[in-house]
Length: 201
Image (tube, rainbow, N blue to C red; front, side, top):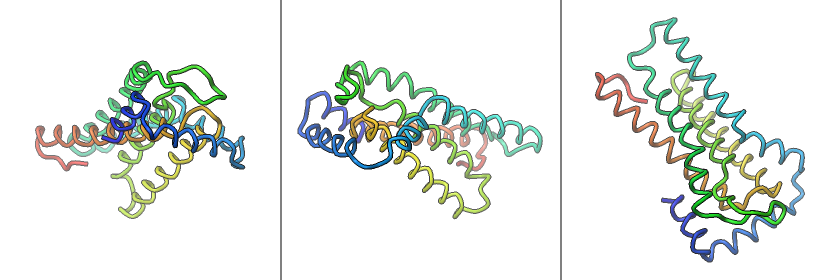
């Protein structure tokens, strides 16, 4: 729903865009260190989160094979992997359909939504979901959730601070990422129910 609302504002040049661009300008002119902002923005690249997610899936496969694992342990790794794979084509399609101009420092168009923000949200969010069973306690897992949220906020801020995206591009990407993760968890639960009632994630 949030992604649809953001897209509607971009396509119709709604009133939110003016406030969005003003906020983007304020963030770009802030005193936040450019080097740190660049580091955070780069952390949303395809060579960071997706690689970590792939490594975690391989580790879970290896651990399940070594110990026997729980029945249908592969359900959530499979669905989160598919969710991650859907990010690039969905983002590319949205960029083509909306054709939003970028910030002044970038020029051109096709900046909505942010691929880096969507990648970081989906990849690191999926990692946190997969680590739920490995966490020593539920409290520790919620700390991981909090760290993931803060990290993604940093990635989004870095993208805007460096002038790569408008804030609304980032917010829409977070909405898309969360929706894909919700879909991954829902699909995993359906698989588990159909295949014998193993404990759902």
